[in-house]
Length: 341
Image (tube, rainbow, N blue to C red; front, side, top):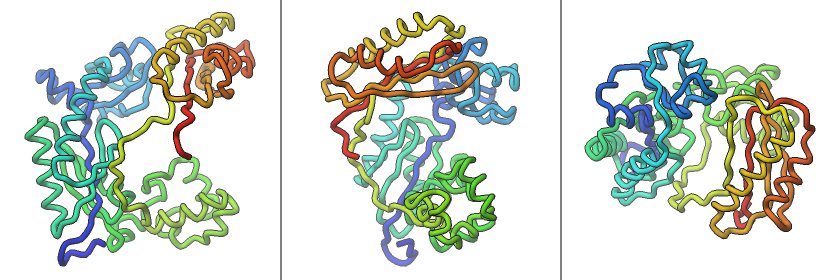
């Protein structure tokens, strides 16, 4: 793997640059070059979060997952647009069709990204050709990461943005990442980073050199050794083109005003349960899960096995919560029984 002489197998990670914002700018060319934020129903005065922000908006500190109100404070001149999921799905399908036309296996990760497994002696040339094909078909830019495995390819994409190509392999892993903090690795978040710091591990190289048994004592017998492996740049190299099968289906609502009456909470859970039940496609359901986010941002979930009526199961799950606190979000989710663990 990763040999430059002769044909070798590579994993490519294709990531559409600022996908949702870019799609909206294509529909509204007058917005090109302006700070654009897409999220919720497009009204920053209401509750909702940023789905994506254009590069111009990001310069003001606006980012995905941020409350729309915060985005508006940081960038008062931002153009706010509502989410149009159906349109994004349609454009995403066009992109994935271009990837599949290569004949290579394609593993879709979401609207805007996918892994592609290719055998070639020049992965950079292949990646640039793929990006050009996507540009010709959709007018969208993408970045492509190249690696010996998915982990390396995913991380490499970040170095290629925007609209570029970058190769990260086992041979270059420590040259590129060795002195960076462990959260430079895909899969390591803030909590894990903080725990590693208490062990004196502050770089990727130190993580790779850590004792797996010592990390197992802190993170668990599976996670500890896994952290050392990804610290070394090890990962899965198989691109799985099997169509994605959802493990669950649910609905949730963020309320513009906190709900304080638990009777109203029960009525909302019943309404969401009926909606979710009506959208199920006949697959057997194992559990019904209720999600409650208390104000300001404390989230709790409880679930019960489905043994009879779906709405009754949702009510039973809600009964596991402690009433009385103001609620800002409610959700109901069906977890399917026919998904392999």
